[in-house]
Image 1: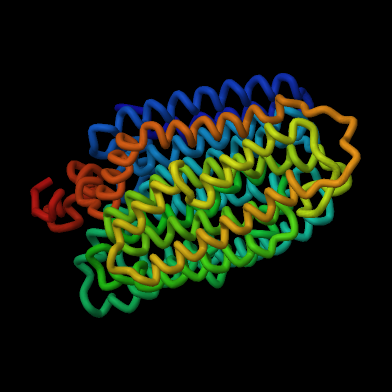
Image 2 (image 1 turned 180 degrees about the horizontal axis):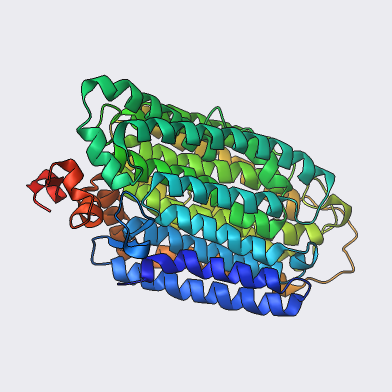
Amino acid sequence: MNHLPALPFLLPALSACLLVLLWGRLRAQRAVAVVSVAALLAVASACLLHTSDGGARVYAMGAWPARLGIVFVLDRLSALMVALTAAVAAASLLYALRGWDTRGAHFHPLLQFQIMGLNGAFLTGDLFNLFVCFELMLIASYGLLQHGRGAPRLRASVHYVVLNLIGSTLFLVAVSLLYRVGGTLNMADLGVMLAQAPRAQWPWIQAGAGVLLVVFLLKAAAAPLYLWLPGTYGAAAAPVAAIFTLLTKVGVYAVLRVYPLVFGASPAADLATTVALPAALGAVAAAALGALSAPSLGTLTAWLALGSTATWLAAVATGAAGAVGGGLYYLLASSLATAGLFLLTDTIARHRGAAADRLERAPPMPAARLMGAAFFVLAVALSGMPPLAGFLGKFMILQGAPGAPWLWGVILGASLLNIVALAKAGSRLFWNLEPPPPATTLDRRLLAAPAVLLGLITALTAVANPVVGFTRQAAAEALDPGGTRWEVLGAGPSAPRTGGRLPAPGGREAAP
């Protein structure tokens, strides 16, 4: 059996356990964390390579039947998300090694548990295990949010924890409703059972799908459930905020993964498209207005993180393969740029004295031209201006959804407001200065992590053609998951439950 689909989950799990045993030995923890993230980068690269020819790799732990056991599914979409997690985690760790990991006792094991939860959510093929990975990811994020302590982080964590506990409760309610109808929580198996459910069960299916969508939209910070995000992300430590850029992406990923696979042939097939698009566009507009009025660079970046997630959700909600493929490409660029800007914000705040990251006049920073250049490139990528990958991603989203005037209007309008907000921030930070110059010097090693992310954004732009081809194929597989369903169930013990016949790729019927 090929164990590759389980490695992105098991590697950080084992590393986190080892790091807990090394409590109090910072140098040993740093060494283990660096080796673990380096190994994860190699595993993520192998996942991309093994899925480049299409199809899904299924790993059933303990060789249990799919409807009973833990199943990991590795395809193009999950491989992309694992690779993105590895890249952002590497940059976050690299920045934390410059001193942030000394401000709390458990940063390194919590970071590994966070990675474990993220990768588990991207790889699992079971709704209940998706809930478990959500909880693992969220519990780690509760601890990471408090890293560095302080009253602002404590206040932000109260709202964050309460809202996510509500979401977790609703998740369990949705899972119970769907299990009542299908008798299974394996996504592929459940999709078959819901498609064959009698009309008397349709209200239960629609109720379960509706509650589940509320949970995913809460995780994705869609309108009107987004108010928790700016305060939470703005208060978090820089390396924590960088990895937090992926938390809301899990909610959008869940919509893209679950609804075509589980509900694609059920009475709730159109629910996600109907509800998610206005919620996404509302969040895009709110994020642009919030960025325009942000008092600090950290808060501005938090609003931009919300806009990035909402734009991807809008692309997914169109249900058009071209828009979803463009949205995946945009996701890669915007997530890297947002994480880079969070890290750069901390570097700027360290060198502006009492002004920190507030958008107000302050003495000039050391190496202001260097930091200004990094800010400019990240601003171009985040606002969707040419020629970087953010522009290409937004262009493909709009090109893939030509019959959606509201989508065009909101995304283009929000992009204009984001350009104005970033231009205003840049002028306050680097041009509107007051004497005298500071006596401090810049620790250029702090720019290493943002530089890595800038390099990845540049690489995405330089090799756009093959990457776009990969994202479009990933989108097509996610929207038409017959092949994934067949890989999971085609030869498994679950087949007799559907009358001995399963939907094969392309909608045909085939015997197991």
